[in-house]
Image (cartoon, rainbow over all chains, first blue to last red; front, side, top):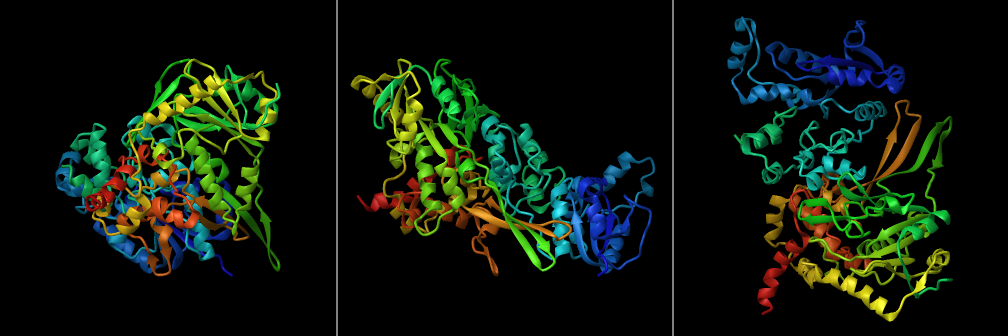
Length: 255
Length: 372
């Protein structure tokens, strides 16, 4: 049986999620053994044409050119999986969605007339059908390997949509919000990072985006009790997953 | 002096007792200060105990504070319970390897040394006894839990104070543990400890210590310690809660609490009796190896109630109601007792401070009106 053909694509992003794939040091040879890496510019200039069995897509759509490019990739891919906060929610660059992007370009560039960009930064799923979204900024190496292993085995990947609090409690991390009054997005954020910030005494920054059925309005009331003012609450939700609808709606209610 | 079951003694300090447990080959798990809270971990000497510390707890709030430096046990329970040892959060059940004509299964090892749980409060012991029934109901038994439990010794500490979140007195589970321990200590107001010997295993440990016999006055002083702790409790569970909840499944309070609830699952994971788990199979990249893992789960997660066609409890309202009615009402039908021991963890460790006693009282309120 021929090995499945994998392609990795980049849109508006920092390359960190692609690097997570390269960072799978111990497993990288197994991955290369199990699949035919046909298109992965971050790793190799050797390019094979499509169609592809699996496409991993990093980054958000921010230009008219990219909006067309993703359609071609979709048409050439049996399974299309988005990886990371940019591809699944628009990324940090979705901050533009709350402002006037032409005002930015006129401030930043000497010749803004050369800049051709869309008004918003959009997740891939706003443009084409996506088969699975892997969250995170960046994605977790552990979840990425699980996703690849599950896809190869034809089973559903084990990527729980529970809160970050579950990860904290399962690993015995003491809640930083309750014990220290640290502002934390954990109760409204999907688990998966490996408990990075709370295990170092910091609140969760929401890198993995909203959990299923989140209640950010109730959390925001508590954040204010912990001393945050409205603007800080707004900005707390406006980071890597600012464009995720649950976070975007909540942040906009604190303008 | 040799010790006997049911007898009471006096000791000056817990230090020799910890030493005797270690000498007898026990892994000693006890309270320690860690990351701003009392957590459970292995201790290698009584010096590791968080002597001189106390805690301040309320809804969604916990702070470790300096207390009387001479007092050993002036804090109450923290976010963790001994559930994490007896019913581990992640547990490999078995692994399998592909063979030319099928696959071989290897059972997972269960590395649990002889363990003494030191400093267990009455609510902790009550919770453990509830889990004993969950994991061996006479019909089905979790053999791993049974092995771990049989290999455990319990050294209780009778509470000398209550936190604002404690309500064990109204659940009849504390603050004095009447049974369920091998050894129990009461830290007396005048210093020193009254020791209760609860089992032969406890007697054999105590036999190696320099004990003095306790007099009736010492026992009265020990009872006063826990009476004072009970009198400090400001929260209580409404008396007829099992019936109240059963009869008010459509109470408007369920919608109201759902507006505040984050469905984050903290209450269930901090709860010392919640026992739900998920079982997941994982495979590696080659597809030649598979493992089956059991992990703590929660009725607050969507996938917990997922069956063919979708999740049964998509709304926060339905999840909160499921948790609370099971804990306080249908648990009686299932296991013959309440599932709540009044430890208050779900109140303190709820990020937004939802209070199970307050919710129960609100749902009970109309009954009180009609009962007049």
